[in-house]
Amino acid sequence: MGNLRPLRRHAARLIAIAALGFATEAHADQVVVLDQTWTHSPDLPDSHFRVEPQAGTPQDWTSPVDYTGGSVWVYLEVQTKPTAQETKFQVCFEATPTYACTYQSPTYTEIGTYEWETPFDGFWSPPGEYVDWTQGVNQIACILKDTMNGKPSADNVGDEVAALYTPTDVRMVVTVVEAGGIYEPPTPTGAGGSSSGGSEGGGADSGGTESSAGSSGGPVGSEGGAGSSDGGGETTAAATTSGGSGSESSGAAMAPSDGDTSGCSCRSDGGTPAPAAALLGLLAWLRRRRRH
Image (tube, rainbow, N blue to C red; front, side, top):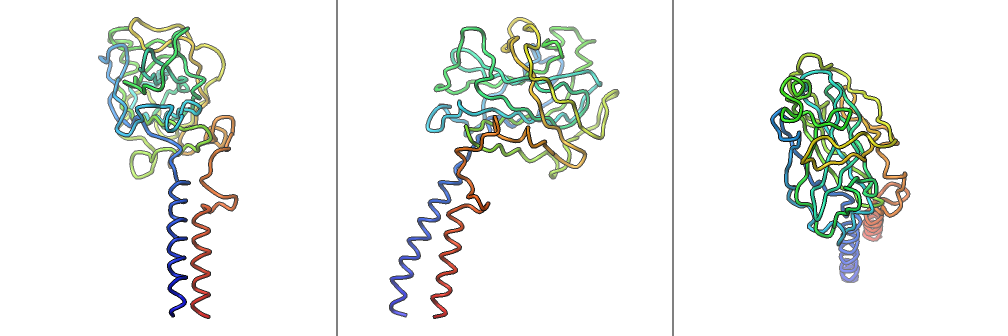
């Protein structure tokens, strides 16, 4: 037994090293900067719902992790919708000294779950203006739009037209993923099932939630309305949509930008985290030593 004590001390040190390595490799590839559920009402000025980034959002988006080489994923649950009017959403980061906007969502006409990805180098900002990401983000604007890049709030289009789009209950999660990181979608509202909370208004279809992926082509239209924090050069992103029993995504949309998985050291080739595999091997070796 005496000569086992140094071995146990050595094993304890190895376990501590393995645990530290596991914690390092488990470094988060992403940060959730917004997770909000709200009623997008017709009286929201210029169809903008604004909120401060949630706790844990980096003050500097370039250090110690440089997220600006990565992408932003928007997860949208449309829980109620007054009609089947074609609708879009877009997210803009109101920062310093200007703002930057993601691609617009695919056009949707029914309740369901929609996701889309925008690389940082695909953001739209006013011509000649650039966000200083070292100063983080002040507010996040969630903007409901029509298919012509207009913002159909009552103050812009009147009550009758606004009623085609709003009120609508939505949940939105905005996730920033570093370069080479793997996007992990949020847990859907309601015990992991389909996110169809609330009753649906007349005209909007219920049930399945498949939609056509949006085009990834050119501009979507001119800027809609004064005072807007979004511009006219955005593209519409291809997206994933949920099925009837939960959130399901196509492989192409769920992969990192350009399919690049380099830089992710989360797993070894065999699928088991490398430090965990080393730890399991060490424990098996100790058991064999005890038998002898």
